Image 1 (cartoon, rainbow, N blue to C red):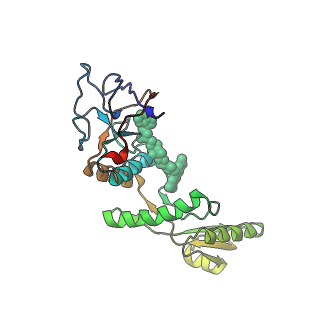
Image 2: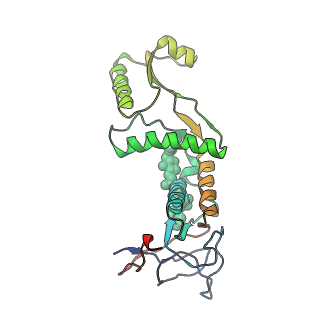
Image 3: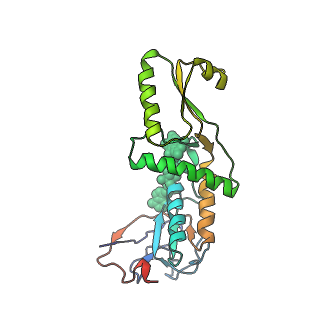
Length: 236
Ligand SMILES: Cc1cc2nc3c(=O)[nH]c(=O)nc-3n(C[C@H](O)[C@H](O)[C@H](O)COP(=O)(O)OP(=O)(O)OC[C@H]3O[C@@H](n4cnc5c(N)ncnc54)[C@H](O)[C@@H]3O)c2cc1C
């Protein structure tokens, strides 16, 4: 059984139900006729999609971008309830490009964080998105914190975080004159970026590849279909 979606839309129109060969993604007008979708793209005049992604934050937009680049023949839509993209968590975080030091070695989080940080720097470079690889110091200020700091350093090495160094008081002061500590991990690959800008760039890539972004489109209901559509991704 695959999920089928029925949208009870707010700003966009009324509920839509059954479909053939795709997920009903677009909002309907009061008359039931499909209306042009916000944001355009290849599917701008259709009212159904092969795939829809709910939520135009960085996760939804990155997923949509990756999907359409891998499967350009599919029609894909992103549905976002706000009038703008990435205005919730994505637009209100600390903007840190994490190096991957904290996660459990061999975990998916550790692997994806290390790999993701490298890919993000590369992407920002390609697209001209401002970022700063400012680095980070993780500091032990009490003697009893040193074993934990050393364990964290070992974990970072196991995770493949590049450039890690354990540094002592003097070097801490050289790097951060106002920072006092006994020992620190110097993490040179940690950085900062405006994640909303990154998300908007993902949205642009997605639309340029033919995807549709529908804003002011809140998903209020999802139904499970009894049968999947007959065609498969690879059939096209
Ligand atoms: C305080 C804080 C600081 C953080 N700092 C960092 C950091 O420095 N670095 C880092 O990498 N990560 C950080 N994170 C984590 C990061 O911000 C999130 O993992 C990321 O933004 C999640 O993105 P998202 O797309 O899942 O969520 P969101 O950006 O919230 O996107 C979800 C979208 O779904 C839409 N939506 C919800 N319901 C519906 C619906 N029914 N129909 C249509 N649309 C809907 C929302 O409007 C929203 O736009 C931080 C998190 C917090 C809480």
